Length: 333
Image (cartoon, rainbow, N blue to C red; front, side, top):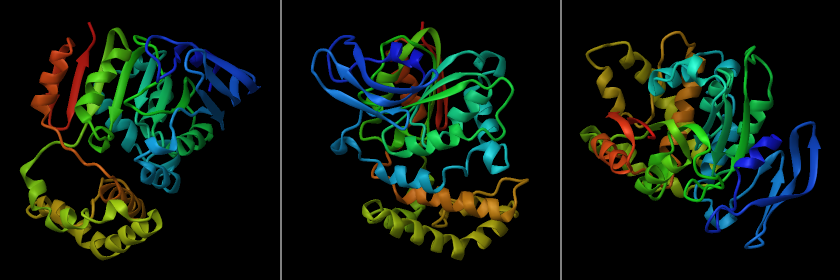
C-alpha cells in the first residue's frame, strides 16, 4: 500500500471521520509492507500484512470460499497473464469509460477478487484502491506485483481487506466506483448499492454489475438443486466436484455453443459454459471450471431487477442514471 492511501482511510466502526495512526511501520520506498493502524477513538487496531491493511474480523468473513477460489485461479482472468483480452474488453464495454478518462483517476474497485478489473484499470493508468472481504486480496496482491506485461502508463493497485458494508474510507474521495460480480453475493445488495455512492467525489462515475432476475434461472433445475448443498462444502470438495462436472459437460457445451439453434440451451447445463472465440479449448475449459466453482460456492446469490436498481440510484440523488440487464451507471452530482 502506498503512503498516500493513508489520507483516504478512517476507522470503519466509529461515527465521523476518525483518523487512523500508523505504527510499527516497515516500508520499502513509498510502499508500506507491515505495520498496524490504530483508531484514536475506539482503540481498535488493524494490522497491515503483505502490504494490505486488514479491516475484517474472522466472524465477518462470510465469503472465504471466494478467497480460496481466487488463490487457485489467481491469474486465469488477468488479461496480461492469461493470454486473452476478456477482462479489458469487458471493462471498457460495460463501464463505458474511455481509457483517456481512466488515466490518472483514483478508482475504488469494490469486491475485487483476484483483481481482474483492478488490473485493467491500472493498465489504463488509474490509481486503484481494490477491496475485498476475503483472502482474495492476497491473490490480487500477487497478480498486481507480477510485472509481466505492465503497460507503459500503468498506474497502481493498492489493496484493502474490508467489508463493503463497513468500508474504511472518507466520503467523497474517489473519482469512480466500480463494483462488478459481487453485489449478488452479499447479504444486503440494496444496502451495498445505496452506500457506495457516498465515496464518490462530485461528478464521480458509478458502475454496477449484478446478476439480473430472469425467468430462465427457474429452469436451471439441476444447478438450483445442487446449490442447496454446495455453498456449505469444503473448498477442495467443491473444486473437485466442479471439475468433474466440467469433464462430463464441457465438450457437449462447446458443441452446443457452435450451433446457433441450440446454444441458448447451454444455460440449462449444470456448468457455467465459457466459450469465447479466439481462445484454446484448454483456456475455455479453465474459465468454465472457474465460473462453475463461482456458481456453486457463494453463500448468497440474490438477483436484482435493473429497473429497481435504477430507481434506487435515482432515489440516492444520482444523475445520468441508466440501467439494462445486469448493469447500471450513474454520476454523482
